[in-house]
Length: 154
Ligand code: ADP
Image (cartoon, rainbow, N blue to C red; front, top):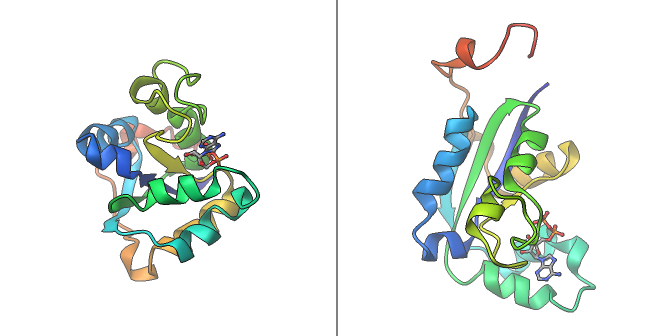
């Protein structure tokens, strides 16, 4: 199924000058970039976004880390994009993430793990609405589309 998913390039990625390299990982996979912008996250939006972590001892620390500087929020689209992007992203703990994954290749940390990626269809829908206005998500033809998929794959 054709899906859209949210990716956030975290402050550590901006600070380490990895925005281009990480964006390239998703582009070369064949995902279509449907939206992209720089935003400064706030405590309010992070309370929503990381609500599932609110009881954890590291909740405030994770929020502070996400507010350390602006982030880049991205919407990528592709067939089964949510799972494909999570696979590309790797395990949460960068030290345990497999080599070849983004976190496996760029992170030594549980917290400073380069990207956020939506983990389910429901989450992707809610998260994209949280970070993008409808007019900030663009529908356009990907010139390479016919060479990325067989015609029974979408
Ligand atoms: P993921 O980002 O892989 O979906 P979670 O939703 O469980 O993982 O956690 C959100 C973010 O909170 C992680 O990406 C990471 O930055 C941070 N985090 C999660 N668990 C820990 C932990 N045990 N120690 C430090 N930071 C953590």
